[in-house]
Length: 227
Image (tube, rainbow, N blue to C red; front, side, top):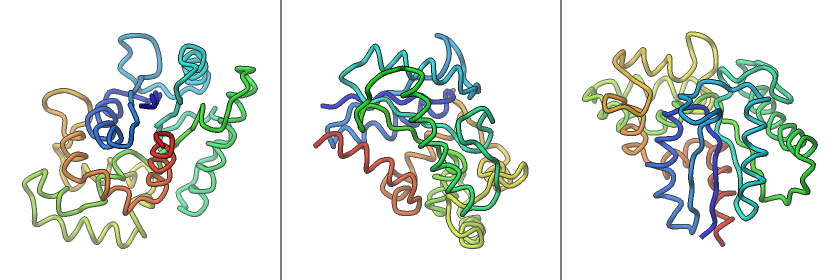
């Protein structure tokens, strides 16, 4: 069993990684755990690269036999991340996110002075936001809010955008905002009234992978660690 520690922004990401992604990956011999950036008890929301990089390096030193990864949204990412540029264009944003991941790997190598093998640190930035994954199954998404009639409109949004990961990062058009437009009561977080983990479980990792190629590439890379 190969251990993977993923540094995340907040409670929502931690809950989904550990309640939805981890059970999926454990079947591939991957023990996935999430760590919220910052000090113990921190509720998240801080994506400052200086803080994140310190946490990554600490984990690399503490867990020499594990893989360290990240899961941060491109939308709202702190502009001090290596390679960061803001764009609403999918083609440009996809290229920027890839560049952020590459530059982040280089920055961690330089700052840590560690001789990292290719599988020791795998940076991942979600395009554009965690909630983009929920749009992979409009029917299940609509059913999760007991509003099956909205599935057609959700599918239309996905089609018009060009895919789930293309729903962009504008202030009024990023995935979470779109989700709130369909379902105003949508709540993030890990509390009893939160919706995110329930939606993620209903949609399922396989469907997310089928509709979100960047996410699929990350999961595939993690799966290979268990071989």
